[in-house]
Image 1 (tube, helix red, strand yellow):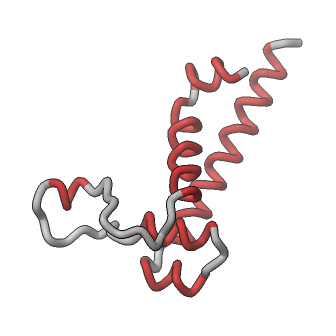
Image 2 (tube, rainbow, N blue to C red):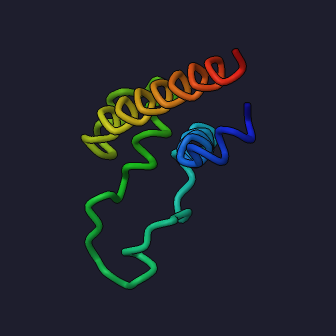
Length: 99
C-alpha cells in the first residue's frame, strides 16, 4: 500500500512530511528558514510566517498562529483535508484492486 501511494500520489508523502516537520519544529526558534525569497535576497515574502503559524497551531496557540500569519489556520485545514481525501481515495482504489 505504501509503495502504491509513493508511485501514484507522492504529494501525500510530501505534505505529510511537511506538516510533521512543522508540528515538530519549535515556533520560538528564530533563524531557521526554507524561504526561497529570503535566499534570493528579496525583502518581502507573502508566505513569511506561515510555517511559524502552522507550528503554533499544532500546539494549540490560535492567537499566536493568527499573529504569525492570518492564513496559517485555513492553509492547514486545506492541507489536512487534501491529505485525508487523497489517502481515502488511494485506500479505496487499493481495496478495489485486491478484489
